[in-house]
Length: 194
Ligand SMILES: [Zn+2]
Image 1: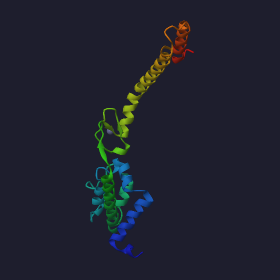
Image 2 (image 1 turned 180 degrees about the vertical axis):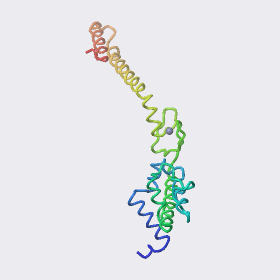
Image 3 (image 1 turned 60 degrees about the vertical axis):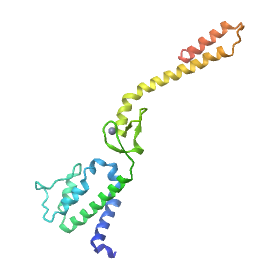
Image 4 (image 1 turned 135 degrees about the vertical axis):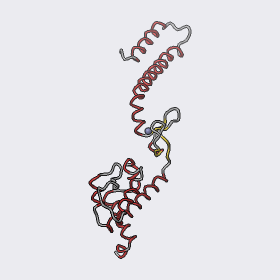
C-alpha cells in the first residue's frame, strides 16, 4: 500500500489496527467511560509525543485506569513508532468526542453523571437516573411498590366480584342468603383460603 509510507497513512493504519484488533471504537471509549472520560487518550498521546521520553521518570504517568504494563510497553517503543501511536490516539479521542456529540445526554438525578438518555430510567416524578443508580434505587423501592400493587389488584378484583352480586340482584330476591354465601366464598378465594 502506497500510503503506508506517508505520515497520515501510518497513523490511519495504526488507528485501523486499534479498532480491528482491540475494538477501540468511539462507542467503546464511551461505554468504558472510566478509562477515557478524563481525557486519557489525549494525555497518553502527549506523553508518547515527548522526543526525549524516558519511561518511569517522575513526570511520565500512566493514564488513569489504564493498564500500567501495557502503557509502559508503548512508552518504551522507539520515537517514530510512538509518534504513530500518539497520532492514532488523537484520532481515537476525536472518534470518542464525535460519538459523545451524537448522544442525547441527561444528568443523573442521583450521581449527577451525564448519561445517554436512551439507557436512563425516569421515575414517576420525571427525574432521570443512570442505570447504576436506578438499579440501586429499584432494589430499595421496588419490593415495596410491587407488594402494594399486588395487594391493590387483589382488592380491586374482590370489589368487582362482590359488586356483581349487588348489581344483578333484584330488590325482591329471595336468594339473599345464597348471595352472602357466594360473597363469602369470593372473599375467601381472593385471599387464597379456598
Ligand atoms: Zn447515577
